[in-house]
Length: 107
Image 1: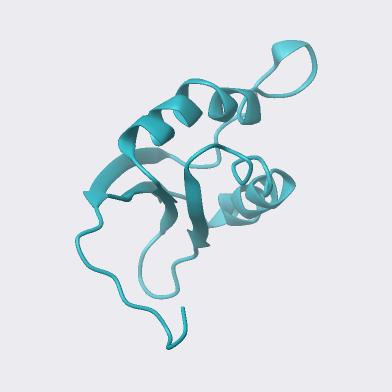
Image 2: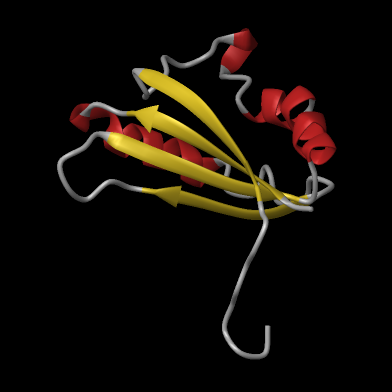
């Protein structure tokens, strides 16, 4: 059964562009990961500074393998191990199991 991981990021207004550019720069970093199914970066539009990073995985083991390997490399940082200052001021990870789904006809 697929699992969904939603990273809830509090991003101050002055850091939004930075966050979005960082995600765009590593857009393909997760796509080749075993068990990866879907990714979306959701920008807030009304009254909040909360971005949602939605990923869907074949199973929990696939997510954990990515978390322990490819994700660390993707977030590794710049020259000589320097890591840029985070754009988000806070982060929380929500986890869900997919129990029902629907899509357009023919999918």
